Length: 383
Image (cartoon, rainbow, N blue to C red; front, top):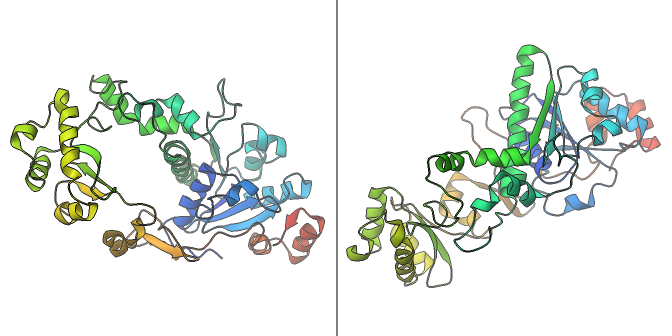
């Protein structure tokens, strides 16, 4: 049973099991109250055991052999009452399996079919393998990140897989479901991580068109070029972030850090930024991270201590807002954003492959004898 009560409560999505951006899309939809049925292979995916337990939360898990005709028919029958299905295979794979857009929409013309790939469904690279940093390389995002004179800095897989991938697909799925409710017609959502990460770079493409952002990374206001928007090491080997962009915020930085006016009086002076950064770094290193936090946190300096994954859940602000939840003894981010009336429910831990097979099929209208037959044949596995 779906335990969530969020704004997507009442919608049902089928997730063909994958790793990375697809599961993140599923987590976002499930966190917001949708019933998300994850179709896993019998025995699960060994790759999904690495770092995906949080991404798989709040789902029901049905283990189906997609190489079995009965397994394919099971998925198609589930499509008849679902609002959407999403997958993250290379273009053409689901068609060959028998659960492509044409087959699924034939069962339910109102179905939204989401496709998550790196390069997109078409184009010369569509069939090539790739990973997050390859996709954000093609969009211009990776080149823009890093310090002056250094190679581009890899931003984990936040920009391609999650921001430009899974989050964009979740947005696209909800958009298409809303449209289907008006038109009665489903459609295919083609979500490309190249294009999603390019969309995240919209402001910087705008700045470039105005001559305010160049390909010389690490020299601009927001990419570590400015002394007032930078990460600094403290006396105890930890770090703080300072983002005093606006003049009034910069003035407070100068006041609280007791910065000499002769060195820091002119904020917007790019040729002097490297020198000013060195001087500010020396000043920041005179105190510990906690000492700077006691002085600046909560002020208009635009300051925050740089916290580790171990530290972040315990910060007083995060504790007060319940920004993290503890599931099976481990901290994980709470569902977000928040809603005043249709709040998300308690987070449900990730299910193992096939843990909910019988329950899912029963809810979808399969008879007990049909479920027993599918399990006996191996087309469906009940853990």
